[in-house]
Length: 560
Ligand SMILES: *Cc1c(COP(=O)(O)O)cnc(C)c1O
Image 1 (cartoon, rainbow, N blue to C red):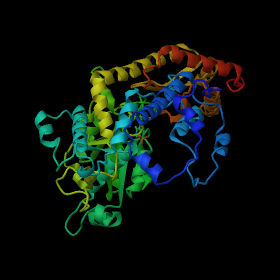
Image 2: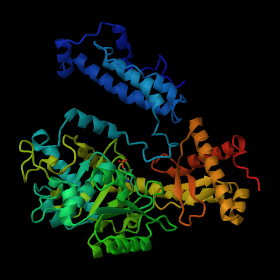
Image 3: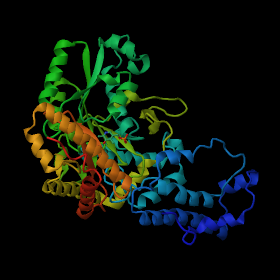
Image 4: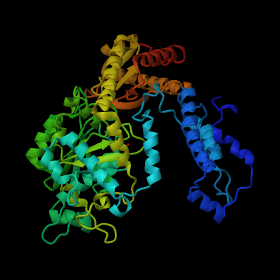
């Protein structure tokens, strides 16, 4: 259907007709490593780039839907061959054509403005160019000898974002920006590893060296607990916490069960009363339990809500607990003069996670972690003799990863191309469009707004007025039954819409503070694509109303 037809195939496709037998030998190897300088070689290179840029662009323009409607099972049957051909099978031009025609249509068109269900979206086109430069330079920022100025740029861009978060005085940045002895933060693969890195630092500081003990990093968790008189380390985060925190606790030897969920208030923000009582209870009943960190979320993955960061900071400061802010999603809100206040208190965090591939609109992937104390990352410093010398700018010293691409070049360039104002406009569009959609949902009697957007994420469900009326007066048991039926109906609704292939809204399950109705399935909208506007969002709601009325009338009828 959406296959690219013969006529408008990308330019390289005719290379196949040169059907010379493909061989791998020293001569052909030489040709793929050494660029020939003549005009025809140049033309070929440019042709390939054109094929990628225009072939994909064409595809995205034609393909307004989300993905080709081929079941996963059928797709997996096409990818069953495990042999690696002894001889080359295809030339680059053919591979590019195959990817554009054979893979892209069955991947997900995350750039569609109708794709509003996830934190993955369209990226500005210049990101593709910047990625090409990073690949072409192939710098390895693990050490200065394989990256030189690129590591210096990385330190600079880390300082720029650090300043956006913490706003320390000029002198502070002058001292630390290029220092080989301190670090303001680091690039990691993603938000998961940023959260892991923050907890890694917190763990190593809490269970650090002391008389007769070299530190948890060297001696391991069992000895560290013994040396520090600890039985258990816990991390406190609201029930909306991202599961990367549990993964991190697992990897760090704390145990994922020791990430304790604190309830939320009616605005889906961490319940400070419950945080205080949990801390008090732990101190009283488990004197050998220590709190490794309290995590405030700024932009919860499911609801986009922001915890009361200032209040959490007060408590952490008073009790000497590491305060981490997971701003993987919400961090760039700081660019908006209008909305930065929503993150107020983030500047008091000991560490902060921000994802570049989310609201910096960078290509996959870019995670970042920042520390208020420029010496914090010493707790995870390693020196391999041949790689990194103390006091050098070798970035591999204080980083979970070893070899790593110069993703910072993309962020630094993007900051120059967009300016703070460019990012602010994107953020403001998301927040304001989500607010308008919330109004629209409240105007439509068939929908219930489940979580009001604070940033640019909202949740709602389909629930016709008769059922809403019924629920309002039902006893707890009956409400539970009705709610269960609504859950199933909303799951079916979301699935039908996804399968129709025009638009995509995600769904998740939330537990509401009053606990009345158990777990509630909600539809979730994330507004990040600047091309998504109210017209599109109304169409999406119309489509849902039509699916519910025409295809699922039984599911949304309840027998009193
Ligand atoms: C996305 C997200 C993460 C995880 O980030 P990845 O880049 O997917 O690993 C962590 N926390 C929050 C709040 C997020 O939104």
